[in-house]
Image: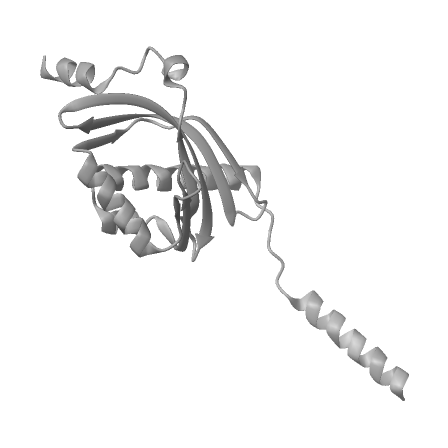
Length: 181
């Protein structure tokens, strides 16, 4: 009797486990579409940060975030900490301009639920009327929540700007002078 009950219980567990919906693997075309969506979230984040619009920045973030700074003391894990850091950055710089994403690498799980994006970009900063043109490397991890890609974590580092800024990217001063012509 015990062996019959054990066999029924085992069969029930196997049956229930096999009825669980399996996640589908994405096709290469679907993966490419998801990678485009990931890049669009990063661009939306950059646009919102440039505009100093915290509510638009939040729309690109997951419910829980973790951002790492350039030293071990700089770890942001809550929205109040994140807002405080963003507002301090916005107060420090009169203008922040993000360039186009370059050297983009995106790795994604085969189900299209988690993605890591790494890229470089130029960053123009204005502080006390002085323009600084730098090149940064950025990494972000995104999770798909309710059908939308959201930034979960990230880190940004300053690259060796003497060697890495392409000559084709003019500093802000040159761009502004050209636009005024």
